[in-house]
Length: 502
Image (cartoon, rainbow, N blue to C red; front, side):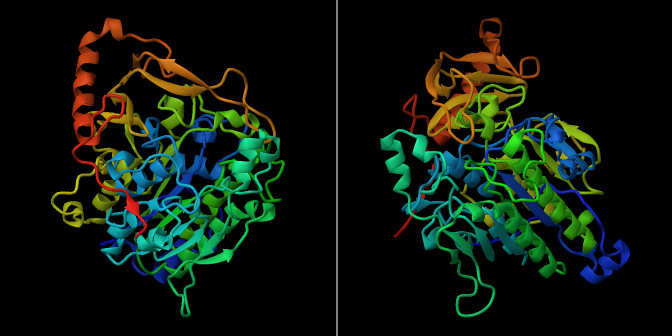
């Protein structure tokens, strides 16, 4: 598959160890080459978990500096409120159900992201970018489905979520049936790609059974690998993808951040992620690469609210992970690229992770249609005009909110229409110390919400705006024809097969 690379991440800087002028000379003329892309992707981070998006009890100075020097997106969405589906969308520019993907893949799965799909890494490889992923993959753990089969030169990290692990500290407190099932997980491996020798370029198991001390070092290790990658590739364009395992439960933090925040262990974890961003920014500055690097920071879905004190904060939004309410999919997001993205700006246009691949293609000058082929449909649009301040309008007539294969809501402009569906919720506060409380199933009969006036989705105004409801219903019908909908039994005529182990 063709593959270009992009550098998207959230990072702002600490100290410059090399003067900018000399660093630019050492790195080669950065302005004469395609831009780098860094994407930093968190796991289960809430909208209210960073200073730039409203947190007052967690210090995130590096993220806040990037936000101040770039553009904050207030209405940026994950494509689905669960791990694997969200990651597939970010890398391919497609709603996950277009790819046959939903939910979260478990260990030893025989399915994953189809290698026939074009990823951001493969897009970048078409322009000879160096590409790397440091962190959680979660798009198939069979050797034929690992990152190095999807455009990445190297990978260090976990193949799936860090709770798919027999040592989860909460399992002993669960009911016996659930504990037995969880403890049936195989040991959690950590992979690294050798750069030399007979296995060069082929991921190898570095740690066969990740233990609690290893979990506490995952964020640090990801940051160290990212900095090393920048140092080794400062003289060529690169795409760096850092999908942290944290703050997905079970949460761990290194000693250097333990007890540092005003929100307990969870806040400490976020502070360490912020530090990791600072490390990346500092490495870019050392090599004079800041102005030629796009940094993107966002998350895969909202907070896992049942974990309470070990969960994030959805901010002003309703519900969290695993739902199509705003708290499940609206993410704390920023973009930073000095000289390209105006500093101190805010974008309120609805857009999302599906827009990253076409935006990267636009940024690096790659012909996306040629890379995709004439008949391959994707759902994202380039938001480079938004990033440059050339427009304030979303490129989307509508954004879709699926849970699995069920279309549960649709947004157009300020309006969001929910269709009748069940969703999970909490009757009481979330759990404490890593043990979750139980969800209950709730049901909505649907409703229309004006998100500019009612972020919390509590006031249904469908009866007052039948014309808006009719317009959104028509847009939803078109989406169902293309992508399907389990509620209406629509199959979808533009859905592609999931990747399968042969």
